[in-house]
Length: 238
Image (cartoon, rainbow, N blue to C red; front, side, top):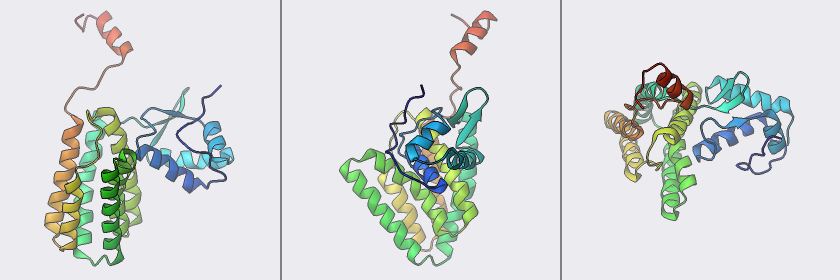
């Protein structure tokens, strides 16, 4: 019998979009780990919806690379390799400095108020020691910048990139801590001051800090089977 999903509270009649949002939230709060297997039956029961609605949510998340369909296994949460994580961060280094330049150059009106309100929620979560909420908020900060830039394509791209980064942090970071308290605020300060180049520099340094913490220069861990095969071939010492 398939185990239940303890990470979600029972939710009645959720829409496909809401199911996706809840799964992303679970990943952002590090409640749903890389490689976790999800089934249509589990999700349909959890959200009190038909399998058709669940199938739609799984299909969308699979298109974005967040869920992976594996033959003879089923659907699992993505587990980015170190190489894939380097690629993800390389794209983020191209995209996110451009986003903050856009925000610095164009009047963002209420968008800037939303960003400051988000930073205030990060500060509150940090003061309360609410780690799960803080980790989620620091990830959502990057999505908010894309949303305020009012570009739906950027928002969808950043949702995929940030979610995969969260999964990589679970896999490779030695200390699963949220972003340092000053890095986001420095980015926002530069945006508010209309200094696009400074904002871009602060964002790039922030992403480099994330990459450094993941130790992506290390070799990929081998599976027990691959290690055994290597030993049988005489390619390993032991």
